[in-house]
Length: 338
Image 1 (cartoon, rainbow, N blue to C red):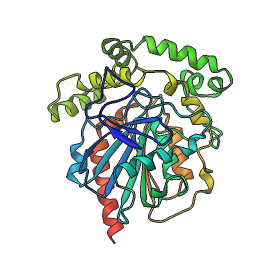
Image 2 (cartoon, helix red, strand yellow):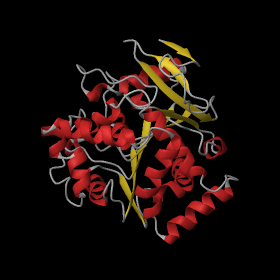
Image 3 (cartoon, rainbow, N blue to C red):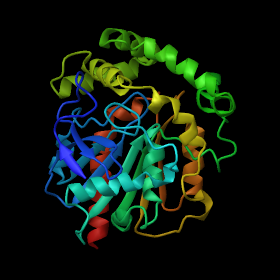
């Protein structure tokens, strides 16, 4: 494994502070990090569709509570190489093991890890949380799981389509598996919507930001104002990351449905109930992308789970996630010290 600050894949758009790790099989893993990088308390968060591992929006909360925040870019997105076609996605946590090894975070007995993910990234967070020590030895140090508007494992959640919009059903449901050309056509269409940042901003504005109600728009304005960001900063950042995410290929997007329908390496109904391993699931009432029914299924199926339901749409948790995470991690640390 080797680490570098210059990507072997990307030469144009870059995420601020992005770093790159060459994995044992030659693939590249892109990631960013913030907070207290010397800490043995780690938060690993996985991004959603059309995103990349970007710690820049607000890394200060993690430093305030003594956490090292790591944001990997998922396989096939941005500057991370595609996932090998001959490997099950349940092996993905080994990439995280190699990343922790490169950061010298793998041999600390006092290591405390929380894995989390938003939307599609929640799938990878769940895979890492429930993996085996053969794939990711550090799983014994993973103390909690945080899911924001997440997806459930479709292989076991037979009624995952309940509450799902028709557009989402076509994009990630049965049609996307049985008729792969649908994914490619949809991917080609979306790629043309993000040929540059201005086009990506128009797409996101029409499909997400203009769909917000007045309360959500007020929260967005307040979030930017409190962080001394200019109006439209969140939209600009999301548009930039969307362009970066598909700037090299559409492999990440084209494999979303396959990942959601694949075997994640465990049966949700048979995971062990370990008192000190806790799960927080955050969902929103008006989410049209990762509908609330998937989160309620996870809350009813996984042990030691707390479910929080927030008003608003898909981005509603974004405006509250920092305070939620600070409270969750602070309380977790206190419980582990008892």
